[in-house]
Length: 228
Image 1 (cartoon, rainbow, N blue to C red):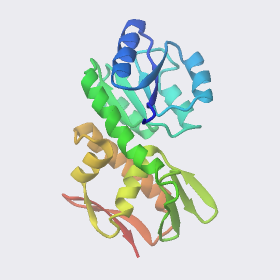
Image 2: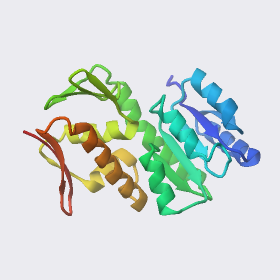
Image 3: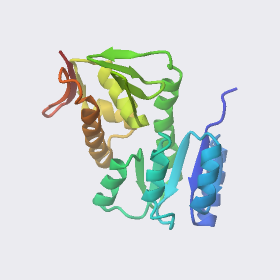
């Protein structure tokens, strides 16, 4: 029997949090709900979770402070729930490492499908711990989410890992934007498209150590990982 995926949920609103927790349980997830970040943070450090959901309407150190704290120790996928649809706040979230941003009110069914879209590729990578992709002067292990250059290990986030693997399996070939969005994000939307651009920029920074490797834009189409 497949092990149930475990979700950690930070939600200040106890009524909505309990409702969301019960809904996720009916969908086959194990869900731990925390109404404050201090207790939730201590439990987070002790247990292994598959995905984290944070409601930005709470007062948890401004919400994004919690994201930054998590990113210092873990690459767990993070979904933000927020009534704020301001583009600058959304982009800031992706820059600090979130994987998805959902504007409230939340459609529970949509949230369920977004969770699955994030977890499906993550499960594939975890099952491939022994596979290493070599290109240029890099060794890339998708299962461990590590990009190695010389003696340096670069720890990648889930989205960075998924996107880099897609590019690596199509070296010197165009990866269309809609293909990347559908395979990595699960949904082709404006906000996910902007997130894709940000993650491409992050990967370019990781790859800048080797001048023979670069990600180029193909105007009107997508991206290509070039390896001389």
